[in-house]
Structure formats: C-alpha cells, structure tokens
Length: 474
Image (cartoon, rainbow, N blue to C red; front, side, top):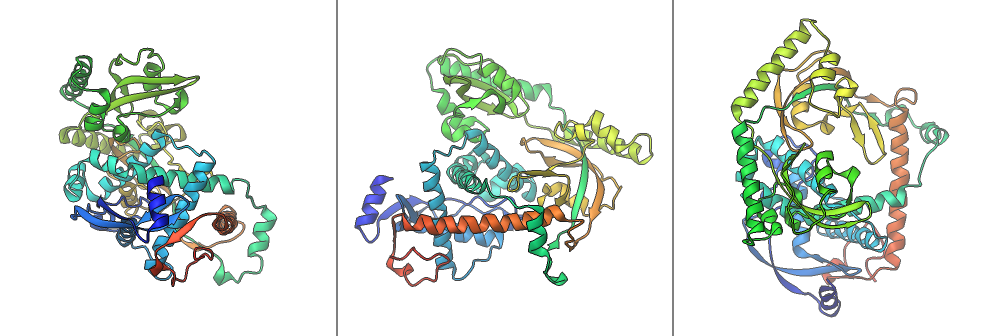
C-alpha cells in the first residue's frame, strides 16, 4: 500500500495489471428481475489499470470506478451530476472514512463479514431461483463468490461502523420533531410507504442419514489428510469450506463465546492444542471441524471448515405438504396461527413472539414489527402481495438468515397503506427523518473538515469536475 502511495505521489499515473472481477450488488434494492439484480462476473480477464486518485495513503484505481459504475447500472442507481465525477468522489469519501477507521482502530470481525456476505448471496439465490442458477449465471462457485466479495464487504462494514461512531451522540427531542414539521404544508409532509406486519412458521426439511454421513466422512477425510501431513487445515478451508471465512483459511479472528454458535463455542473453547483438530461439531449452520490458533483471555481465534448437508427435492416437497396441512387446520379454526408458530416453528427468532417477524433498523438502532415491502425477504414479499390481512399463504421455500433452505407459511397480520405522515400516528417515522437529516449534516461537516487535513492527489482530467465537496482540488 505504501509503495502504491509513493509511486502515485511521484508519477502522473501508475500503471498496473489487474484481474477484473464481478461486482457484489446491494441486497436493499430489490429489483424486479434476477438478471438486473445479480451482477455478472466480467468476461474480461485482464485490463490495464491505473491509479487516478489518492486519498491519504489509499489509491483509487480506474477499475474501482468502472466497478461502481456497473454496480450502479445493475441497481438502477442515479448519480448526482456527471457520473464521471460523482463516482470517484463517492469512492474518495469512502476512503476518508476508512482512513479514520484505521486511526480509531475500528475493527470488523470475520463473523460480521461472513454474515453480510451470506445475506447478499442468499438474496441473489432468492432472486435467481437456486444456488446452481446463481453459479451458472456468474460463472463462479459460491465459494469463489465469498472469497471475491470479502475485502469489499469488510470495507463496507468498516465505513458503516465509522459513521455510526461519528453520529452516535446525535439525538432529537419530541419538541424538535414537532417544530421541524410544524409549519410544513400538508402536501409537503413525508409520504409513509405501505407497511405490513407478518407472522411466519418455518420448518427445516429433513436431511437424510446418507447425506449427513457423506458430510461427516468428508470432514473425517480432511482431518486425516491434515494429521498425515498431506496438506494444511488452512488450505482445505480455502478449497472446501462453505463459510465466508474460507478466504482467510477458515480463520475467524478473536471472538468471545457469546458471538459464536453455542455448540461451536463449547468445542472451540475446550481446545488447548493447536496441532489437534476437534471432533465434528453440528451447529445451526451445518457441520464443522475446528483448529485452535490462539487464545487471549475470554476471546479465542480458531480456524474451521464448514460443510452444509444438501436437502433433497423430495424432502422439500414433503415438508411443504406438512405445512400446507397445518395451514388448512388453522383456516379451519382447529387452532390459531399464534399457537402453531409458538409450538411448531423451527424459527427461534420468531416463535417466542407468536411468529411475528421483527425488522431490525440498524441505522436508528430500533426493532419494529413493521416492514416496507422492499425490506422483507424476497420470497416472503412475493406471498404478502397475494394476501389480505388475516389470510395465510400456501407453503413455499426460502433461504433463511443462516443460509439454510427452509419451508414456510406466512400470515399477513396487518397492512397499513401509504399515506401522508401525521405526528400522532407516525411520530417514530417523523423522528427518524429529522434524526437522519441531523446525522447526514454532521457527516457532511465531518468530511469537509477531514478534507482540510488529508493528502489528496487526482488525475488532471478530474480537476474540471463540479464536486459536491470543496477541497478536493488544491
């Protein structure tokens, strides 16, 4: 990195040969067609690249700009002003936050990166129909996608955490919310989108004993190969693990017990010899073998290999029939949906709340039962569109937030149609609007101040751009 910085500072352009890669899209946009939402891996294998901006000691490559341009096209994104100027400026702003995150020692765990990557891959699978179709479309295995996405998603998490730290002390009072909207004309009040409340029951299709034995035998084979000195644990993790940590040789980084699956943690924290491999561990994600790297106080660093048993189509259809039978019994009023969710659902996140799905708003650090349609899992949203309040869907399949194929039925509990905000009914939404504006202004002010003390160099052709922030050109 320092070498790139030194060359960029001295030369007008630094020419590099890099391999072009596919683009991870955003799981928040929800385009209508799978081909619009799953960016395809570029067919161009080698391009001549160059450093066109440097921010601090972070270079921005021409390929970075083209990647963001293609990603924006896939998501239907509209840029403010000329994209040739707006895109590199947005990348440069991200570099400012990354630079500050390094100064403030902001950390992102492998578990957090893995979760974000798995959510994105699951979203793509939902949109395109299956893992096989996704791999065929992108011309990559799921493992290759995880490895390719790692660094980008790590940077996204770092930028997000840095922003959250900067705005953590900002708040607004009820009086400030009322004052903000007090004199606003009714037709200028924010439009609250349609929201729904949804209850769900999920069941995991049964994995055959033969499939479980296949996975366990493969993990035993991996253990033997490492113990015999044929290869290393890290090499096998990179090649075969079905976890986002595969890119790091299966290494998770230092994690406390509470952040790990309980069954996984119970075995990992009992390891004492880095040269020994654990017994096979079954967690809610699949089957693992684990190798100790180091332990520091109440945190442990391990490598692991995760394999997930495959579900047969017969098992899926059998479970869907069972759920359809449960749905028919609920419609016949033999028992209510609430009780069925509490006693029958496999979804531990919702069954204790009668199946009611929770929408976690990380930006405003809130949990709510109300979802905008685009915030629902894709398969759930498709079914909600067909239902009236109180109705129950037929059984369908989906990928849950742990990457597992599950069967589900849902009940539309409530639908609130789009409307102009009122302080009595939509205070929380209106508060969030005011809070978001305060936070946005604070971050803009921070960027302006940060620019004054950060080294910036850009290619001459960008000097005629009309940027959002003053201070790039010196």
